Length: 97
Image 1 (cartoon, rainbow, N blue to C red):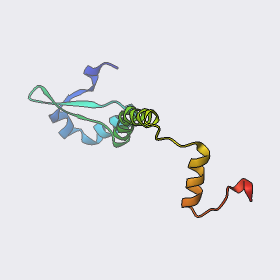
Image 2: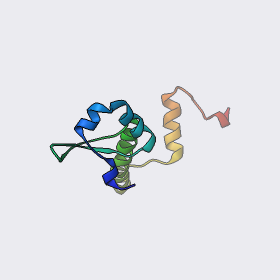
Image 3: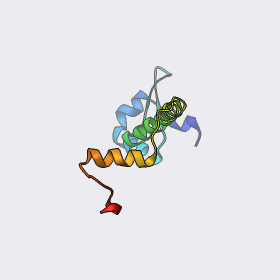
Image 4: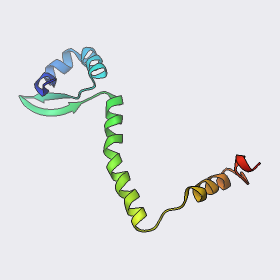
């Protein structure tokens, strides 16, 4: 789909709001809204916005993880699970019961 298919004037948004919402939910493509011929905003469904935000957060999480590894701020999986069991009030793993 060409980006030009997803550009509409603000008058279209005002006159066809319900149709536009349905379009955004099914096509999963953002829509550029123009005002006086210039791009004014981008709209998208809430679900797609959430997915976009999660996608944008992944590189940041990866960077923090790599930084933690570089600084030696890591624990083994056994230590991590032991801490979780301790927080949950469990004395031993289910396998040891």
